[in-house]
Length: 379
Ligand code: NAD
Ligand code: ZN
Image (cartoon, rainbow, N blue to C red):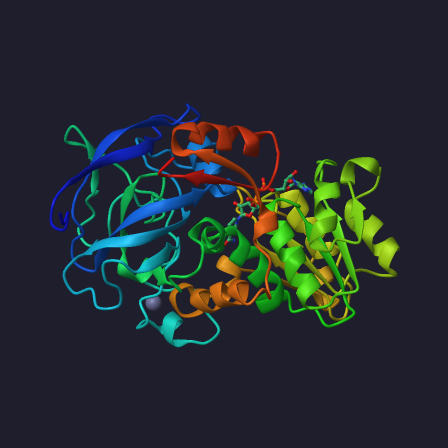
């Protein structure tokens, strides 16, 4: 029996209040409207960005909301005007989209689509500003246009990457955010040369994906920096050759790295969200050619200070969303890289829980345990 055009009642994990455990309950999901698709989520995983917006510390709180943005699923039905996907297609919903028409989408350099770039404040759909989720008629807000902590979700067609149906969704799911972000930050933005030195700040899943990128680029030294020493053992599997814990030193970590490398690393990738780490990541690159790339998401009121001389001395500071990948055009190709074993993903998935235990995934992340926790929707 087709559910197209009907309201679907299904389970979703609703965040009713900042910092309160999610509550898995039955909600209603309206049919997709113009340029929207309804997707049955099979697997979703937890990224730190979900946790920030759930905690709502330094963010504008918007509740009740369905979080989640790293996922894999299958299209259930499509709304008016949707040509690029059809029911049955395997897709990765992505927090930043591609309209394929705006100046950014037409530029080779950018993935910051004017229409569909990440918008953390928006709680409704672009088409009419309304939500497609409700509970007893009361609206529940969307998150990043993806809201994957639901058995069914509605997403703009410009935010779903159609992928090879043979690809295992419980693995390639992590390419819809964290792994592509970290890997792309290195291979597309920092671009270390073969034999170069790379510093990675923050050895969570995103930072380790950045290290994986450095390994694939054949960097000779990959220095991992984290405040949590439990991260170091795991990071060896991702090509990190040396480790620095800023807490072990009584001088700024950028000075420690500069001494270790005779003047600084060729490039650094910051994957923490801490402004202190951002400054260190910039100041630890070599003068004359060093490139630092910011990936971590700061709090709303954050700012940082660095002396302009670091720029005058020919250091470059860049930032990137989603590793500079164009979500619809590039991600199917990254999935193929995994299929051809040119990129490893399995080692990022350290935990797995049934949907009903989704709060355990939050506990693991808050304790800094493991990398990605796969949430199985049908279990
Ligand atoms: P995570 O919490 O798993 O990992 C972050 C790591 O950084 C932790 O191990 C923590 O101990 C370490 N850390 C924190 N402060 C530090 C400091 N001052 N110095 C050194 N290490 C420090 O998070 P994650 O899921 O890997 O995400 C990392 C960051 O990337 C987050 O800020 C997340 O919001 C961001 N992110 C950005 C994008 C993007 O497109 N730019 C996409 C996804 C995630
Ligand atoms: Zn666009």
